[in-house]
Image 1 (spheres, rainbow, N blue to C red):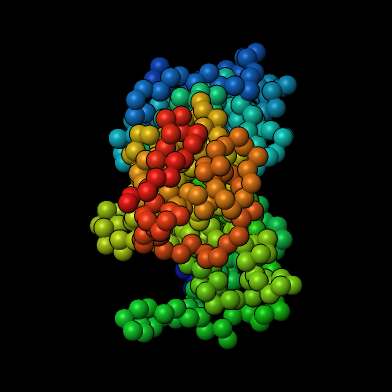
Image 2 (image 1 turned 120 degrees about the horizontal axis):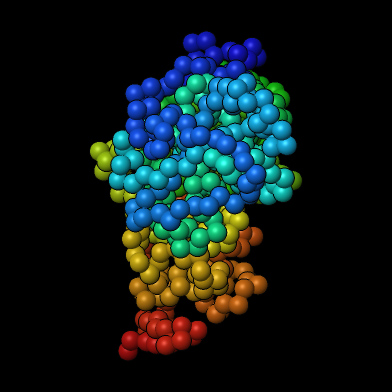
Length: 481
């Protein structure tokens, strides 16, 4: 156990054993009898691993049926040790060591997800060129070192664990499958027993952050004023402003995970959320509540720049993302009863609201700037807005703009405002916003969704009415006289 993190009587923080020494107690022994844990041919707990001459970086995915997903059955640490002891020559020339990951992929129906105890992994893909192997049956699949470390954190000692991780469980080369799986993404994360947010290894003093966040939670006070709850923090219970621990927290919040566009849905959809950084982990909702309280009270991890505006600092994108999650209700448990009790504005964000408030977020694929929010907005289920990875980025943005123009009303005015804010390098009509651009001015941090009405008068002072030309390349303004 880590000796430098004192968790006695704190209750918020879990100190994780080192990766090589995690607890060997099976967490869900009742699930090992499920067919997902059995080999169909032999009845063994694990499939027969032959490690023949076939070494590949591309797994031969089977076609999924409608409503199916894949889960990674992550083999425990004891599996590799037993394998190497019984077959000493297995690792010869195969890069097989006690640290090598092994698993199998199984197909399950999303409707049966509540019968399986699986974990969804949320992490930053990154741009690492180096790969490290995971063996899936006879196939050597290359994954990033970050993903490898995250999976090792989830490994049990003697029992397999079911994990959903996008890079492995979705055939990234099948554009049709990517579309279908993205449409199921909210259900996948919501059906999981828990969602694990992996921030990375310990560095830049991150081992101090768990205790600091816990101190913030214990210093929080709330009181009712004029029918609303006002949050405050008793600052004399916290480290002094000059303490190095505030910089440690800032460095954690500047990690890539917080700026990924997909993490909003991944964190919001989960029934239980756990944040892991190095050897410590804590409840995700406690983590985000402490950070939001720190933002509200302007605690010392909030930097100030030369112009006195902390929201131009590097940490700003992360904090905006966290505030957006708060506005969307990350502090509420994901169950029907609680969601119905949430204020209506928390459940009624339009896609335009989310696109405008996520300009700071990053994605490897610019189309995901739209697709990542389709399950969180009130337009969810609209077939004309569904994900489509066979079209270009410009075609996706044009399709979204067409939808809102045909819808009419204030959405058209907002589209025009967003389109005029910056110059796009894409070949787009002048009235279509380029949602991949992030260098736009910010006025508010995830305010409530827009509920008013914008009127765009025409030159004569009469009410404007927007219509699309047949080619969708021109926007025609007509008036009602």
